[in-house]
Length: 348
Image (cartoon, rainbow, N blue to C red; front, side, top):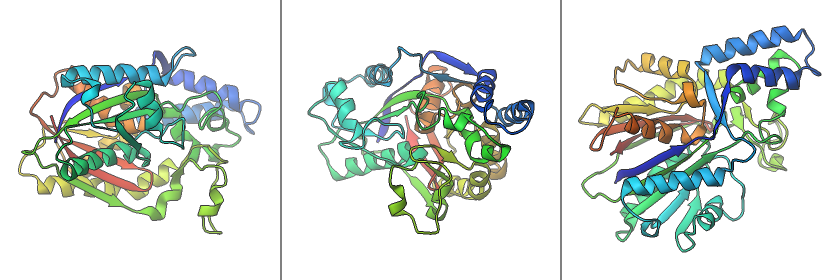
């Protein structure tokens, strides 16, 4: 299969690191147990260390579904097809409005694609990669299938949501161990259209280690019924928890391994690699460990961590800037909560 249409859309409100610090001061001020200057210095150091610069959040009049509609329209235009030609829609974002039915059903309703087969994949930041593998499997299983569209939306910065105000409210520095990753999050939407191409057999590599699933989570109400008695999650229901330091320490080796495994199976040098934009520093560190000199593109510095939209946004930007073009052979490289790691071929 081949990627023939792609677009990513971001909201209009650019948020700088200084804005993040102001928000942390605002929410933490009544609760922080030491001089607030110490917290501000620590947060500023963390943001600089990650390579964070800006991210984009919605204004009050912006709705994710409208940005998704634009992304879909532009992806369809690039692909040269209409929405009625899409055979399958997969929604694989973390953020969602519905658990039942699938979020994809409401998106297709908004897009007036009411007769199109659709479903969700829930797989943390690995969602897009898992959706690509699922699309590949559908093409193999159904010869009548011609076009699959994968849609992602990450809009977690609601005023009373999984991030705000809880993860911007710090009582003691230790809380930054699991709240700091929230400070780099951005918002974005993407649409990707894949076409059947019998001449291309996509290669995939995945590594899983569910023993560390507790290191990054958003627990639902009554989540305890699915935990062993000894397990305790530090965040309350529906709040984002991410122990960034532990994830990095445990995950770096497997992340590099999964990429090396895929590259060793290929008979060519990839034109570009698109890593999940969790942190600019971590990306650079992973390339150093892997001893790779292949050019890579990430949107982290500009967009922050946009979760499942990371890879699509980077591919879309690279295409627009002329860094890659039709016919290129690329790799999408993702490390995710779970813990799980993937490297997959993307043919343009």
